[in-house]
Image 1 (cartoon, rainbow over the protein chains, first blue to last red):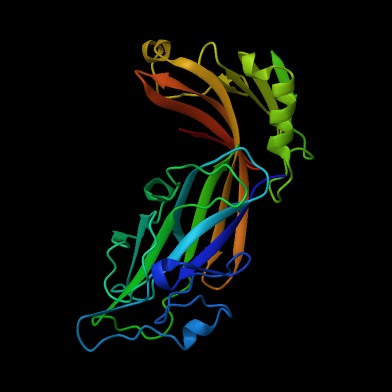
Image 2 (tube, helix red, strand yellow):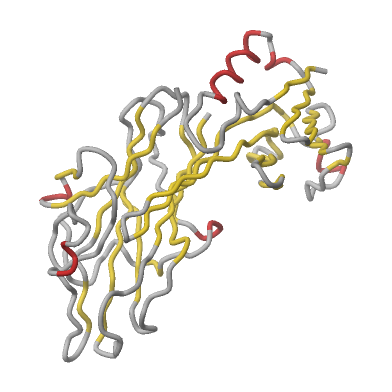
Length: 169
Length: 130
């Protein structure tokens, strides 16, 4: 059988709590450190525009988990493949790390790279130890939304799509 | 030269059919890792991977690999590669989509650095990648 890929969300101390039990259905960014298990929680956990300065979403800590029988997974990449932010002053950032840190809603020290929007500029989250066994995971990809006081468009930021790509042999 | 016919049964781009595992097992059982060239028929295209000349040939035409002949002669440790390239996309709306392409080609070393060329097969077209 081929490998299966599941998206996992990590919250809590040292990003040590994994959700959900299967494949995550979303990576919604919120003002609380929790997985949006209903897909609508984000509507009540909004990131408000500040009167001055910048507000930040809680960092979204993500990993890919591989299940099944396979020889090797290599070249794991992630990037935003579609979606336009509803306001030009909003910004998404991403970063990669192999070490879990408790998510913050202040300016991230991990998600510091402007979100790539092409495969060629994607973040590589292949772990140094490789992926070759049932249950192996990628490194963390950490995503954060910046909401500065210059934002003028109310409401959702628009539907964004995060794509994970890997080679299985 | 070994010829492989990839049928719709063996290559299914929409699900997790065990195409690549079947392919690898069959080829390795036949000593495929020692074969210097092979040809794959897929979706009406004939793809030949020629390790001796470091060429990939699609429908009789050599693909431009962006390396000159002199550089080609420096290639060492050539071996064939084949893999499944999967893209899984997660929309904030909750919609998840997945596409799979089949990669085939070769890799080796030039001056100690890894060198890889392959093509990606899908329903519509053949892409050169590196």
